[in-house]
Image 1 (tube, rainbow, N blue to C red):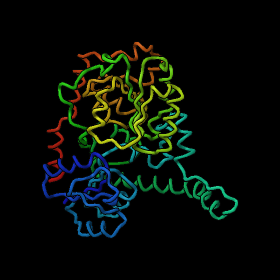
Image 2: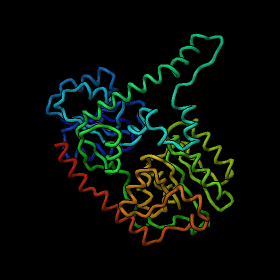
Image 3: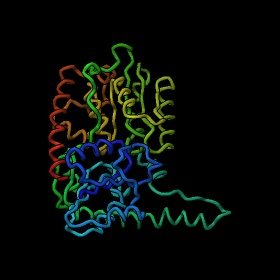
Image 4: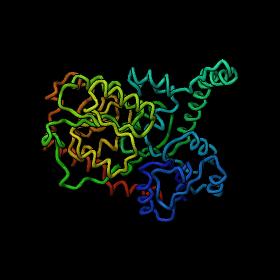
Amino acid sequence: MNYHLMVDDKFINDFISDAEKAAPGNNIYIIDGLQENARHVKNPLAVFAPYHTSAFRELTKNMTGSDKVFIHWTSESAISFVLSLPAEIIVSMFFWGGDIVEIPFTRFKQVVYGPKSLQYFEKYEERAMVEWNLLKPVRTYKTFRNRYIRYPKEQRKIAKRRERFFKRLNYFFNWSEIDFEWIRKHFQTDAAFGFFFYNFNPKPEPDTFRSGGAQGSTGITTILLGNSDTASNNHQEALEVLAKFRHEPIKLIIPLNYGDRRYGDMIEQQAISIFGKDKVQAIRGFMNREDYYRQLDEVDIAFMFHYRTQAAGNTLALLYRGKKVFLHHNSTVYQFLKEKQIHVWDAATAADMSFEEFSRPIQSAAAAENVSRTDAIFDISRKMQVLQEILS
């Protein structure tokens, strides 16, 4: 039996469907959360059982050496469970990015965040805040202790546990061997690499493909900035680069509905202060996948300033729509796509571009090459063959 340790995320429904095609009836899908709180997972085969509960222990109590465990989001609770299993049980992980690169917080933060984003992260997100209150000295002391004494110890504990996990890991599944090499550089592991990708979205209908987006009909260049309201988007650094175009006919669409609302509020206000309210559209409420991809159809340029693997699904959806995509050269997504001869631009170089060069649409031939080369990389039949092999 295959035990899938999962979280409530938009990729999970499609994975369950694919897994059942590959190995019907041979999978147990366990969501680490309560069903009443689920926003994404709707598949009836999913079982909601937080990992710390008796319901989870009941689901996993009869595991044997012939069973397999597949982690979809490598959380601390998933790691702890895996490390308790007999060595003969095969353990695999599907790499997401943030579940490794951002945990523990202290280890890789210098390479994840730009200077201003790092300051925000360290001040507001990395550690629990101290609750200063002279009328509640015990509470003040406890929160101070958590921030400055316990936190470093917990981070070291997490780091050691993850070292053990990667030594225990048997298979690492992802579409980019560059990410796997990053793992091998930072962790000691004998895990084997396997090809896999989550369904990022259906390809758009042929009549919706148009390189250059909507710019030709409106005269306004629509720029998608980032993919979520998380500091690893490096929005502040991106806004600094784009500020030189504030007087040009542009519109910013900024997805800020998936992460930290306080951070999203700050970024929305910063964008408005630079570009003006009429040029900023912040997406704050929940948007289903179909509506979001329709929004992407209206984009001319995507501007992503992540330093780590992030927003791959957005990037591929935009390439399929013939859009001009800027990614930061530090991102392994950028490095992978350049290696595969996909036409993308380095977001860091936009600071030296004129608006004419920056906003110039991708040529139709280059956009078509992006589609054909992306198709060759993300081969669904190859992925399904891999799933049949590992789940059977």
